[in-house]
Length: 66
Image (tube, helix red, strand yellow):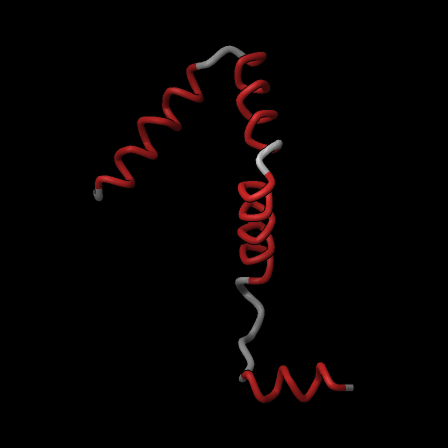
């Protein structure tokens, strides 16, 4: 386990241990951070599309011009 993974696990464990209202406050605070929210949206889109077949950049650009 990397240092980053270990740190993330500690933070996640601490978050899970919080009472519901405190969890909601943490999430609300995170969602007010525009850059963080954009990153979460990007990650969600990537996860949704992970099983889609890949395509070349040329193919993408050709379809985009239509």
